[in-house]
View 1: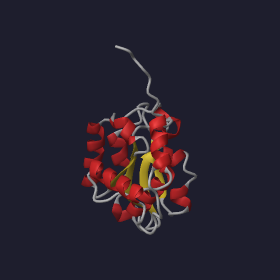
View 2 (view 1 turned 90 degrees about the vertical axis):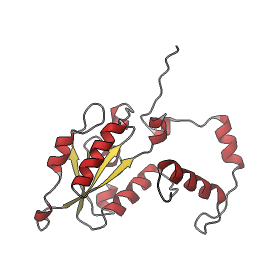
View 3 (view 1 turned 180 degrees about the vertical axis):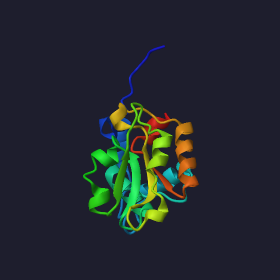
Length: 185
């Protein structure tokens, strides 16, 4: 068996094949804003189907996708998101969740494998009775694969455990999935 290294640190290190380039060059395109771009529509529909969601939205960058997702779930300025201290959203996205959305980041230490301890996440969740003086926790963010942990993939079991914790506290869960399809492979 031949071992090979697959680099999942960043979606930007993944280069398109010649077949992919040809598909891009010949894709039928139109005005996506007016709903006339059949290629964008097919992509959004296929991704929604694969991920089990009711709809998809094509955006131009992972940063934009993360910002939109955080703002949808943290719809009140002063909301708080729990995320890894070494996560892409926290380190590299120019503080957009705070600057644009007024969302407070509550970092929890990332382990070497990109996870955060479940107990540490739970401890970071604010008691909603303190909303007069503290931000209100609304969201937990994970990253899969985790770029700053060498592109390591989070297990489905770990993700489910964090999801159960989020549900227990009435929170939402967002996965920064810029490389989620790489991780699934």
